[in-house]
Length: 431
Image (cartoon, rainbow, N blue to C red; front, side, top):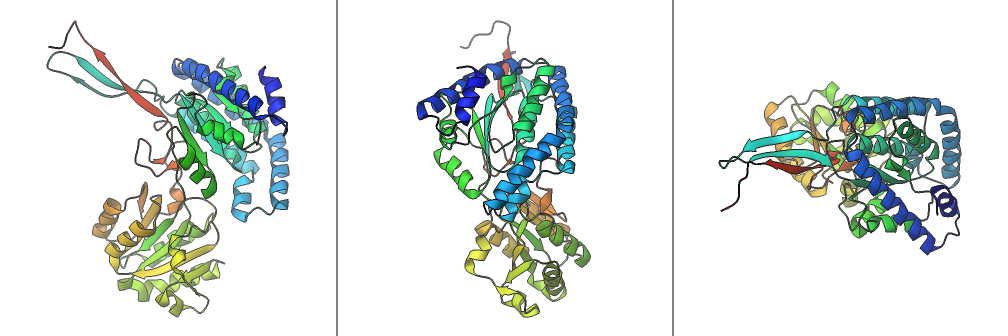
């Protein structure tokens, strides 16, 4: 079955399980061949493809916006949550931002072949640790059209093929493949699963007969938990973004207000949005009331402990569940704690190891927080919404990982590589 025929069959909701399995296995086999070709592709050719992709995205903006409007209307009619609608919606600025992210990725040094370390043994063996691509990356996502572009270009720059199973991102995918063709790279380097059948996800989680090397899920807790539970290949993921801002007694109030407002309300539906505000008891008489009033006046629901409730009648009582809830909405939990040690303890108990911030003028408090909070991203005097590969200078991210193996934090081109050892000798044998 050729690719076009397979696409038509897979788009048919009546596709049989056997046909779907054959389609997905064929995609995996083609991705493996493409990955082998990309491993050897010169940096200039990959960069040429990225340049063409950025141009193709901008040229495709009108049909992309039209297709996205249909997706948004369908999701709205189905009663999707505001956070999901926000992630799904594409604007002209968003499309230009995607193209700009591709151009940033193009300007990054090619990681493939980079010598990470080198040394010579007493017996004369010269050893190098060298970056190499992971191989084939599977990305499973929902309602996030930008992921199609981010995942495709990052995988390409790092010399990987990618299989994408997302929503209706066909126009974006077509632009990426057009860039591959213009640069003489294989179309199969970036493939989009042409069916929404959930059985396709299960097949990817099983590894497609050993052709997928790593899975990256981007979506809600239900999707990510399923991937982590069922995947038979390594996973780069975070289950949820339960992020905290701790305002220390030594914080500047005006700075704290700016950071807390941005961390919570800039975009409430992103994984880097703050869900809990912790305030130092030693400074709460100066800090607590202004921070809470600011949040309430900006339309944010506040659920707080007894001290938080005492400063404003609009504050609702916080339940024990509020400390471990990712709202993804204009809601925040507020608690007064006994200094930086208690803040660290609270984050350790309730946090998700994603992103946490301290606001303080105390170097000692800041350094302790940065050292002891066990999260992928920790910040001093900055908003948690900087938890983003683009903001880190990666151009884009394929996801944010909170695990401890290989990749942690924003997953960019370096994290999409592994390494191998190159050993050069002069006839040495081992005794």
